[in-house]
Image (cartoon, rainbow, N blue to C red):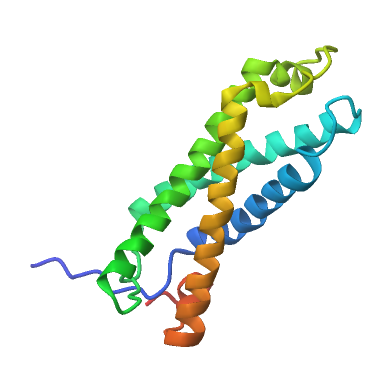
Length: 184
């Protein structure tokens, strides 16, 4: 007896969907905290260590959840790729989604390297009473962290515009693909 083909799905797996929206909130929250609260705050401000603790915990959570999301995505059925109506745009979409994973991994890596190089990990989590360095910008990993954050914001903006284009111009119901419901 020949094996039966798996039915085509029109939505992502519910865990991928859940992680997509949780990660959306965590990534936007972490970027907002980093850009608007932590970066402009003096390293002598006593509140900075608490904000850095939150930022670091959320950053590690983002890395773990993105890893889980990638693994689930690799082993579950996916809807057929959405088309923007032009091969170049379709390739750009594939590149953008792959780049999300790479940028998040690089954000986590540069954050971890910055924490270790500056002693921040011991100050925030290890009970060290050492002061924060006068500036984190002396660490190349921190400079890279900020640059990658800007690239991630740009990619998020592109992703939002592309999603809105699909939903409201192409009217292809793209939002259904990354929401909960019957998959087949």
